[in-house]
Amino acid sequence: MSIKQKTLDLKQRMQNALQGGGAKAIEKQVAMGKMTARERIVSLLDPNSFHEYDLFVEHAAKDFDMDKKHLPGDGVITGTGTISGFPVCIYAQDFTVAGGSLGLMHARKIGKIMDHAMKLKIPIIGINDSGGARIQEGVNSLAGYGEIFYRNTQASGVIPQISVILGPCAGGAVYSPALTDFVFVVDKISKMFITGPEVIRSVLGEEISMEELGGARVHSEISGNAHFFSESEAECFQKIKKLISYIPWSNKRKAAPFPKKAPKTKQYRIENIIPTDPREPYDVRDVIKSISDDSEFFEVQELYAANMVVGFGRLNGQTVGFVANQPLILAGVLDVDSSDKAARFIRFCDAFNIPLVTLVDLPGYLPGIDQEHSGVIRHGAKILYSYSEATVPKLTIILRKAYGGGYIAMCSRHLKADFVFAWPTAEIAVMGPEGAANIIFRHEIMNSPNPEETRHRKVEEYKKKFANPYVAAAHGYIDAVIEPSESRRFLLHALEISAEKDEKGPEKKHGVPPF
Amino acid sequence: MKKRKGEQKNMISLVVDDVVYTTRSNKMHSLRKPYKPINANIIKSFMPGNIQKVFVRKGQNVKEGTELCVLEAMKMKNVILSPADGTIKRINIKEGDIVPKNHPLVELK
Image 1 (cartoon, each protein chain N blue to C red):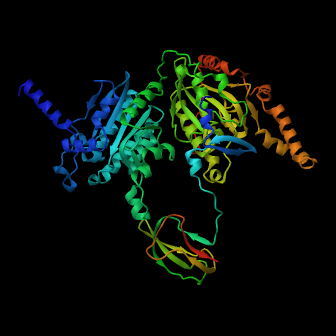
Image 2 (image 1 turned 180 degrees about the horizontal axis):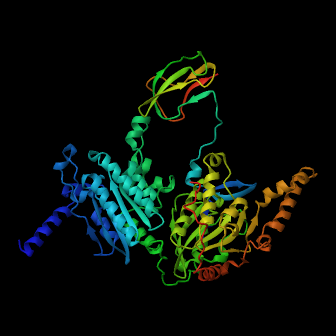
Image 3 (image 1 turned 180 degrees about the vertical axis):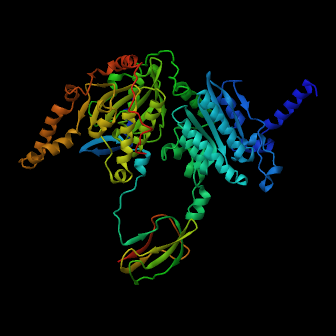
């Protein structure tokens, strides 16, 4: 054959492989309201940046007539490309090829692209759309999953790992996304569960739809498995692009700097956001936006445990991770879910050299039997662990109340925050004034001729003396009491002088966090 | 700020350390179930499954270890034993029933 003929032959082979599962299967995929795997990659990556590898990989399974079946690319597309110029490794399971089922070669392709990502120290993005294990390949299919989980774990904290659930992701398959840093889901398209509706029906006799069991909303609001909820695949890809812009390629780097931009101070007036009465709610995201560059805040897990707000923003072009109590929801208390949410985010930031900015306004831990029984002790401990362990610059501003265990947990000086600032509205105390007065002056109140009046007087006395930042400042636990409008200036300076911070914990294999 | 008026709707009161906070609930908080004290006399299913056999009847005296029923779950036949001596006050199941987890099976007195 001449070169021309050989090139033609290559083109023909590629053409065949690029058909995926064929026209009929693609029609079905579209009818389900889904993009095809290749369309997804193309819409997510920069134009013409996608380079595909292993297009001609084929399975070698023999049992159950598998030797007669030809599965193009073995049901998964792998390659590299760029997102806004940042390099990424990517794979997308192709539901049109044998339902995107995972066989040995399918898994090997994923493993190979993950190995590339690790060697090249760039993020890996996995688009999941698969019916699960390829049953015909038996234990080889399980082996495939196991090797992916192992790689996910090895890569954790080294390169950012992003999972996108754009179809079913069931059974063992869910554990790869669960091991990655961020999980994106899309309404009515994503479905994640260990045991599906059919098993539940046969074991329990209970009817539940896939959507109610493991739809995008469930994982965004209830289980906390997902981090970003979108209405459409297009919106989901926009969010992934945004996330990529905020995070570094690997743990060896810092996030790419962006042009500096001032906050929109006309829209977000920092001195007018918080009510001085600590019992009144407000949206802490307005405070974040009054501080961050261009008033931009990219929230993570917006719908889950909303009493804690976490997400990315920039200060003078540099990415920071914001962690803030949300007085608007459950008064901003710490509870099982919000502790989990914050702890994981803190660890991500610490692993990837993203400084932490903590905004404090909370009454403490959420009281309740359900909380105690669901382990608020061990879950609450995670936030202490993550903050204490983190060595990135840790900057804290106490906006208003910081009571009791909540004060300690929210990146206090005692967990080795680098700088702790407090607004004049801050109340740093062992507990809320009412509770404290009721304990300290119990006898006095009980024995008084007018207990209610005495209680009120004692509460006011306590408030006057302790409901302020100056007691803590007198002990040196606060570095500076600052006007709200000075917050950004203080944070920028603190970040600037922390640029070379090089703190190392004691040598150990790894800690034993209260998982 | 501007949104404050609308926010007054859906507000709940949350008490922490005797202080009453005005705030909103979240999904998980609103889904939580009130606590019920554990009643040792009610024997519950420890996992979902189907009742393959019931060995006792109402009013029967049982001893600790008496076989009450067989709960078949995940292809395992689990014989449920009486945790104490007593009399069967009520049987909430019959053979062939499918029960969820923590379903009261038998009540003793």
